[in-house]
Length: 173
Image (cartoon, rainbow, N blue to C red; front, side, top):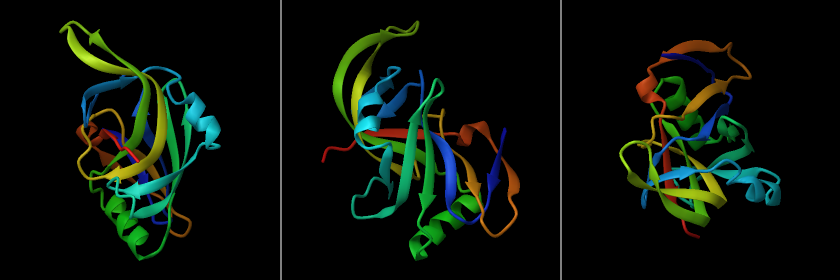
């Protein structure tokens, strides 16, 4: 289990996509190559909408994304209106929510992956659309790791590794 700090101000850090991790995307297994997000991050100054469950009509804040050797690091701020406070409370109560990216693949090819020879869609260039907090992520490699509090002291809680999940879906806008 890993340690997660939970507060109520709505700022958080997590992994929106983990380097080398195979996600069960909307169009089957997908993996992102190193640098797949470089251009889209530069175009948007790395700031993207934060949505609830990939719903365009439910923005809940903003997220700044950074591509590192570990993957796509998300630094987010949940707006503390009524909806945002509800979502922050869910995180504080350790409801196992995950992060997910909505993207359009620009350059992708199917490649055999690992010892199984399973065909995986390998995306080497993608246009990011948004990041979402979701209920049922599919990849056990990423999650919200820290939620900060501006008022209350941080409370450390343990989250089982099985709850470190990510969901990747193709959102076409």
